[in-house]
Length: 77
View 1 (cartoon, rainbow, N blue to C red):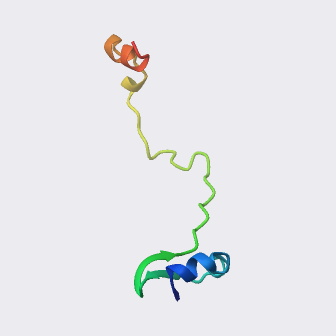
View 2: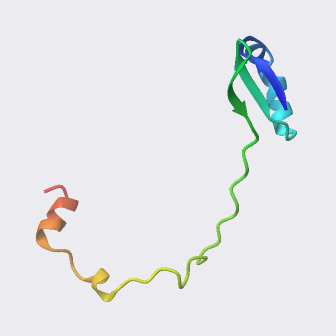
């Protein structure tokens, strides 16, 4: 893990980002006091259609028409 002060981080941001992409965390400090950490973001996993199948249950009332008052609210009336 590398620690750099703000001024150095501003002047070497591209190099620091390359280090982060390589898997190294970078701490940014102000006057030697750690303030923030740069770390590599994880790519989100691939979402699979239907992966929640069977985990969510909707009652038959879900498909009932909305009451007029609520319908007016949703339609901005």
